[in-house]
Amino acid sequence: MNIAQGLLVALLALPILEIYLLIQIGGTIGFLPTLFLLFGAAALGTYLLQTQGWNTWMRLQQSLSRGELPATELVNGAVIVAGGALLLLPGFLSDVVGLLCLIPFTRRLIAAWLVKSRLGLNKGNQPPSDEPKVIEGEFKREE
Image: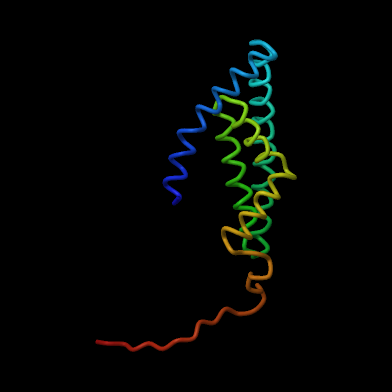
């Protein structure tokens, strides 16, 4: 299965699973507690999105000012944006995954996994910033 097929299956299955979970949880604990849980998760997610987004932005600025490659901070920012987007979707599954993306400990684990496995970067691959960057080559000027 390629990426496009996987995304299609996920886009079709996610709403069905979310509706199923809403019905099951609503039937178990009632309508109002279910509604309060959804709004509580959204409120907590909004707070975490604001605070963690700002903290990540500051770390990104510090990393750039030191001349380092801010790959981890950029991936952290992307995970925060994904978590915020998931919290906009109504449902418990998307709220749980969104909150996991916004909680600092789990977000760092997700970001580290993404940087290491998907981007192929880790701290050992970064070129030292104090060495001059020289690109050797030849050129020919044609007039």
